[in-house]
Length: 432
Length: 175
Image 1 (cartoon, rainbow over the protein chains, first blue to last red):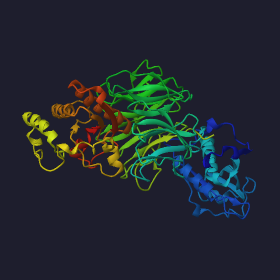
Image 2 (tube, rainbow over the protein chains, first blue to last red):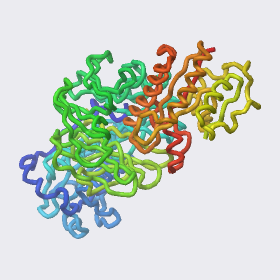
Image 3 (cartoon, helix red, strand yellow):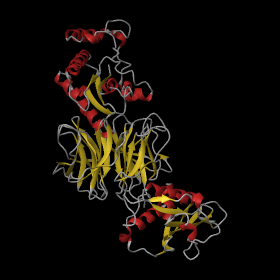
């Protein structure tokens, strides 16, 4: 697919300055600290063809969504991007300090036919030196992806950890019809692509272990069966069609098994499937509802939702079903657990006053923190690959739309817009 | 809420219902209009299930067949007295029509989360199935399916609407 032409998207580090000491920089910006002012200059056009506008636009959107940066508005820029230099030696940094920038992105774009080459550099304005630089070469259609990668690199430079934007979010939307269909978009909400067009119920999308397709439950043959759907709009492969629910197929991070909810005599239980979809083993055995398994990053444990205590609560168990213990302690309706890729916390939705709010809690049940707090209903949290952000659905503005927030809840932004409702986000791993 | 499918076959049920003292349900149950006893069940195949109705934009009328919806409390799959009475009526109808199979659909209101409600719907459908089996209906004649909160009859944020959506719906098939 368009966003995955990884082999063509070769990158070279064109300057190795300041690659070390990233840990030190993590103190420069972070949650609770004022957004860092950054200017993103238009790219210098190496040839007459128009390119690079999407790069700077997407880069700005990513950095804005990160909650870490404040983008200096481009209409305040003094410099002519086409006539000024793009290296530390040739830039007049006074032109950038006067507009309030502490960091600066400059670069150049060259397009020949369908081939696009973008050189992008990050500068420290006060110190007048280059902090990082990349040259991207690929298909013209990969321009946004180049920006997402550079955004992740800028975030890495300033925080010591790679940013989350070279990834995708799968979700369900009614924008195209009566029923929910699966869609995929870039993590920043751009480039929405429809995946299914089935005129039936499609539910609970997640990513295949290799990131090249989705797993979802569909009623296309009547029963809620589990399918693998290849991207971008590829074929359907049936994974599991046991009588009754075949729900929430979640690949283990090691790619060996799928955790699902299936019915035993009408009783929803968590079970494991082999990679080919055949039943491996049942994990839970309880009269109540057991549903929504979510893997720990080491594939050794599962969080899930059960009403065995009399109300839906979040539990954790070993991947063999042993050692079940309750994680959510407050609230009488806690569902939709999502285990953070860093392994330290579990996000979930908790019903308060008739609406859902997103919470996170440590995996031992301590230190529960509320992430959202607004009049809408906030559901289905899904972690970014770096474990710093959550995507979720919210009805705060009317119909359900998808939002992004940092895990602390400080910076929340809408990712989707338009008609219909957007729900059930599933954040992919980083693209290859 | 319930539009009664009226036919001769219902008379037996009606008598049992009247005996049970469900006076509110007597209304509209007299033998006028609708299909007669000979009308059969050709219109009541599985294609008349809630998903098929939703596809054609006709879901919302609710309970129109010979078998009647039962309703649940919020986040509950327990059968209350009213639900058990309705299931007894449904069981009687199934005994009177031994060649008919039935699919029990479990539904929820939209105040839960999607996956939990799919599981809850499965529990609701299973609760009705197990009760029908206890009343003497062969297990082989009954299948269940959960639609969670995906096929609501109404969209209003009122207790009346939520209550209507928290239902088991019964779809007869075969003749």
